[in-house]
Image 1: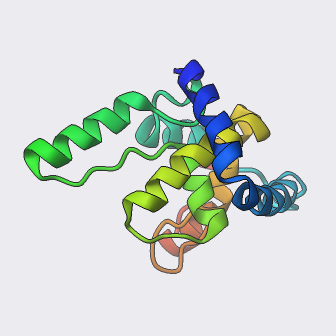
Image 2: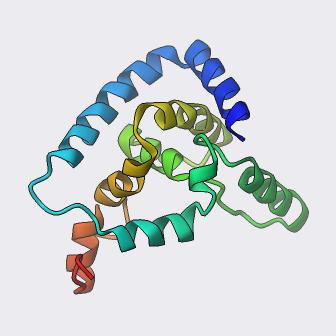
Image 3: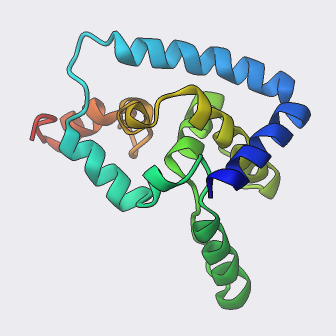
Length: 156
């Protein structure tokens, strides 16, 4: 899986260089803010639950999960069901770029850029970063806001 990601990242650098440079700058700012946040980091349990529920092959891929992509394509074509295949890296890109349109073009860009994110941010930091910035529903931007809105303790 990592060999495929390496090949895709080279293509991403060739085809999406300008977009990557802007995204990399924004990603760097978000990552530094995450590391320097005065509040506590999302708990290890919360990060493990995120990986388990959203991207259980997270530690075995380099930003893209070919198995999830094939499954989503098969279910879409054969069963007519829409299903996600986004990795945590792809979800970070979606939030940082602010691009949420539902198109194959956006998804293809996310696939390519995710391989670069996987090389830029340490793998063990990505779940916590996504929990800090992710969208979890109305008025729930970030894990802390989601916990407050739902009346949960972020330390639990």
